[in-house]
Image 1: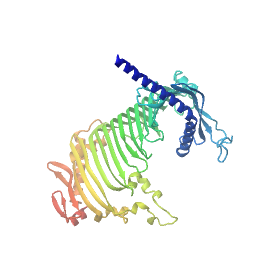
Image 2: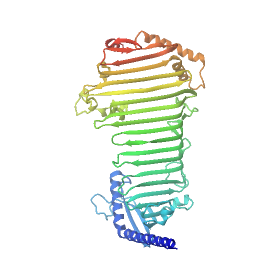
Image 3: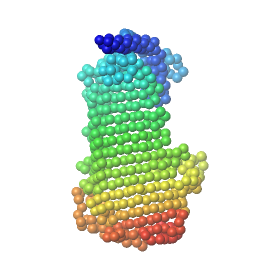
Image 4: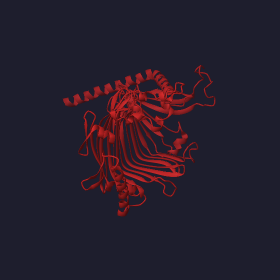
Length: 538
């Protein structure tokens, strides 16, 4: 009996605490709502001016009405409008706007229910048991957009809830109804049709926009411009996690299937991707990156019924991993790993391959600008003079340093065997460097190269490439290619001693070089050369 009385007492105390917390939260909401809405409006408009979130001709205006407070919840009607900005220098109440034809746009006009903390029943039913200062529930209905509401069967277009903890941490969930738009029901649609299945979207973070995380799950997305131009996604999921400095973002992007078609200058090209997974981080300011991507199956499929010279390409189990880090002097270190279990080119099964590359001391401009930009006038500082030879900018004015490129592994495997290459190159750069200096062997500090390219493997690759629209190649075709390779190898025998053309019972191109600028001798294919002999051949 005493235990029962004690339990009833504990429940009563907790109940009184809950009621007291709800009463306090309700009063706090009522006391601060005007200030909070004013601050929110100011922040949105400030961010819009800075980041262009909304059309620059508009400001956001937020107002409320029909405020009804009860013990456990508060109900109000919230209206959000986009209003034309007044002209520069005009009073905010002035009717003169930056665009005289612009009209106010209603974007939200709905009832909102704010459930009071510390343990809102609405939050508990959603599985949230952490104390909440408030739990806000809302929906977008025909009041805001009667046209869209009809298209989803007169249901709420969006439903959502927002949890606000006592530490001002926000958790938002929005659920959209499935919607199908086309020209018959939406005149302003720029494409033929847009179909989006029911989806769930999440956003959480501090009230000061730090530690933000955005996540979405949509089962089906279809954007169709016409029969030849469309993009289809199955089970699209993404997560974006911007970091505190606002320049770095962690992300995940996954989908089960993508199908796209593009009519490019009357060349119809289709791409299919299965089981795409991508995860990593990227810094938009420094271009630092740590990226990983995998694809179970990739298909590039040009329409063979049209006149074009593009060839079908299919990859199985394709993996891409890339890292890059740049220091304060824009010097980059990084790596690249590529692999595929199978490559089909046209109708030919070409084999499998792997590339593993590392680099150190590379100027970031080489990684972030294209070849065309490198030779364009954008790379010159004219300064109104005619002497372009002296106008090449900081690219040539480098701090003395070494660049090092390591090809840890290149392997290509087909039914006839393997091509294997690995190499390390260490090279000195300084402020006297220019493109012609690449041939300056005195700058070469280290070169290690091992290469094995058997003729059988190379001949099959070349023959398959030449007969890519056939399902296979025969012995006669491969032997013809081998004869051509033999002629090339004989030409090389008279030009260099750095290559050997036989390894055991295999013909091909082989080399094993170990060069170190600090040593007087160089090891080449088991033989010893002087540095001068090697560099003459090199």
